[in-house]
Image: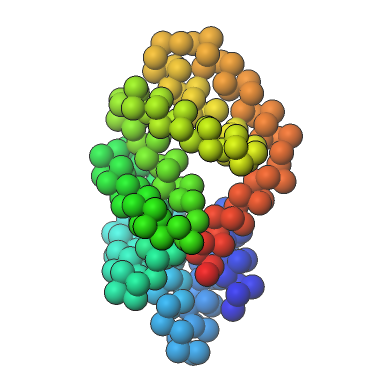
Length: 210
């Protein structure tokens, strides 16, 4: 089952129909084995497939049920994962205030449970929501804080991702030369350290795979 879980993580990045099949198999195996935790985790991730397919109602139902089950089971990893994922979904719909609320909940749970790891997805969702909501000064402060951590960790993929966001912040502040400069650096970092993306990806998923 673990191999299917990991396969679903990768397929979710490139091929939603295949990811849906992976998650359906995981849910079936979990039910067969009596693994309640992976039944609701897999069902929640099927909600992401619904979201990609445009069925927002089904997505909300599946992810909401999974999140509720995660809180009942005191499943910290799944709580952070689903709150972060919901924040990103709201972000994509320009529902920035709601995205910030969900992201902050995920960040708060992660802070209260240090063993859960650093909530990268939630931190980035909160930052982008702040920028989209026009909270530019707060977004700049948040961005600088995240950059300090990413540089200390020598996480080149995160740095590239944050530089892309820095370009948006600079553009919002009418600093066009700065925006162009950040855009010029980000692709180089992302390409130069492509393997770092795999490490970051696996790091993010390890939290959910526990």
